[in-house]
Image (cartoon, rainbow, N blue to C red; front, top):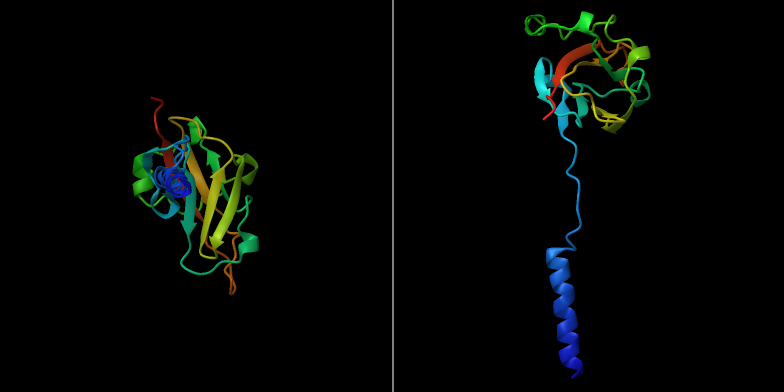
Length: 156
């Protein structure tokens, strides 16, 4: 009798472990590679954004005032032709840290840093993601800066 109860208990635990409890889970946020996002459209509004540097960076210099996202005002919107012509150079007029959206910056490794917006981005809106010249290389010198433009997805 005890062996039968043990087998039934074992079977129930095995089924639970095998199939899980079935609770609702939220899928992970899409990760956008900042190095290739320039000119992209239909970027998911719940994305996070990772920039991968060629060299190791001083982690203390990569923060919300030097790696951030700004909304592009209608009068400042950049058309696709400008982006294709190499507009990814750093643009200090667009990349004003006073206009950044609320976000957090994390660095899992000293070459890759990620911006986590505090809330979903607006639908059908143009943004710039900015890496300023305040970012420092681990050895010496400052990064030359980078600006990438993208537009978020339309509201379904």
